[in-house]
Image 1 (tube, rainbow, N blue to C red):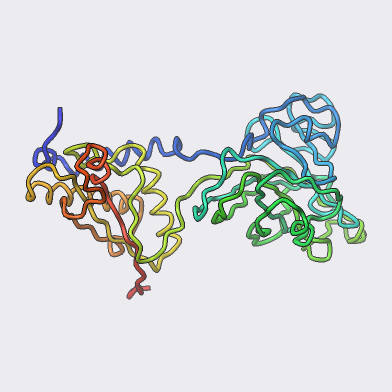
Image 2 (spheres, one colour; image 1 turned 90 degrees about the vertical axis):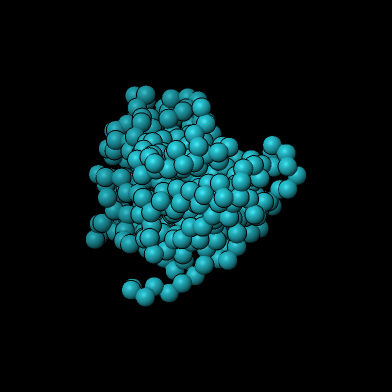
Length: 372
């Protein structure tokens, strides 16, 4: 049964609240991890030999001659979990993780490489997250780990660092090296440390490479052994639970955007489940850019009277605005307005055109907060 607008309006506050609770409960369903086997749970062979990540861990490989390791609870050798040849560490979650040198004599480096579930969308924002822990048998700690995205898997014949010059000379197109922000040394040997950054895609990225792309001279390294020579030290780290999630497009001020998945059913203004991720993306972007405010506009198809469609479009804009406010957006930074069927984006009068026209748009503009 289709509810009329005026009938639904009597229950609007409760209806909006229940919709928000429902969508919040299923939010995790729409945060797909684009890194294949990001938790190192899937393996081809249970590890029994060191330096065998390429053959043991599903989807993972080493892009250079550095010999990265794979650890799993299934192993009864020195590549087991939690006890292994570099110390003791439980996985962040699951039963496996990778291990690699981020600092070693003569600029020796190890890296890990993995294909993504899909090619990244040009101009879209993504968040890369990983968990790292310093191995107990390390001589010192660093605060340098970065990431590179590539159009194809890398295979570079070197045991040293993959510097900007080395990557530039490769026939495979890569992005610039991006460092994870660091507030201090990665020196915790018991707990996992979470690292993350956001990146805007170029549109060719199909693979992710992780490691320390700096030379020893450029790396911030602190020895834990006062008697040891810096040039002879090692920093070995475990990595686990690596994820890359879509955040949304790179929005520009003063441009009109149609909210993805916020196309309403006929005669309705309730949010559909897939609208959750789109609105979460907008909220996160506004949260990260406090100098922006947003204007929400609601629209209908051509069916119904002008008066009726004006009311319906206002409700569509208002339910979106209320959802963003419920997520935490300051009311002063958002406005909403309904335009009925006066601004169609498709005037062909087909069912598909009407579906497109039952939408919500937004425009972000810069402002100066009068109460900083």
